[in-house]
Image (cartoon, rainbow, N blue to C red):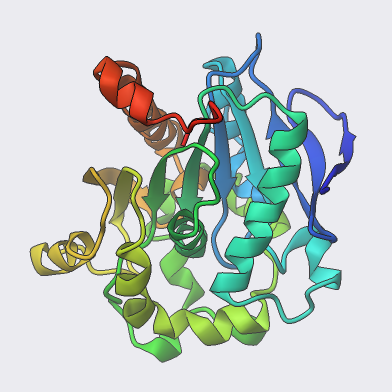
Length: 308
């Protein structure tokens, strides 16, 4: 049985390490106050970042962790496989499929020891959105309420050689957009969050447009995609958005555009606005569940009484 390895108290936001089948997944957690949580928000960072991407402290209110906890959710931000504590165990990182399996193992250890309320809801950014979709496609019986993905499409706006890769290669400026979109201290904090992109992730990155349709066909939970006004990695014209929607098996797909924002949404001035909208989508997913006809709610429970 997987177990929670350790939790280190620092403040309202605490460091945490999960046992993901023998691989330690580090991260941050902020528990609902007062508890128990209405649901657990799992935050999954993008390429070359860490879990702290979702915990900006350069201005009050920008942290997803503190905002979610104040609104009655437990927020768990994990370092993806190949980042943080797991980097020493996975020096080349993992393929997307293996990352999904490792994330599921880590979440299993968390749910064994923590109240999850109505279930799990994933907020994911960029390459973390790929992992969120891949994990949703392989859902392991836990209640997954929905996904909110930013900074990810299915059609690239750049050539493969411009993508972030090994040894810092790639056009990293596209992560930011105009400097006016970020508080002055965001770039100093960002330096502490930057982490090398694992080899396997970098090699697999250019293949996402061809990988996406097969993964999307197995995603059966509501999904919301957000494109920043100055998103520079992914196309978001009508044709590209139609291609993003078409293969998804999700019962509901929402596509939103966030003005006054660059790719790194959760580090910018727009972070609180975006996070509130993401949590608003979670509220909508909860509303659909709570307001469902009695027969449908009954069908959503297995004979053992475990929600599906």
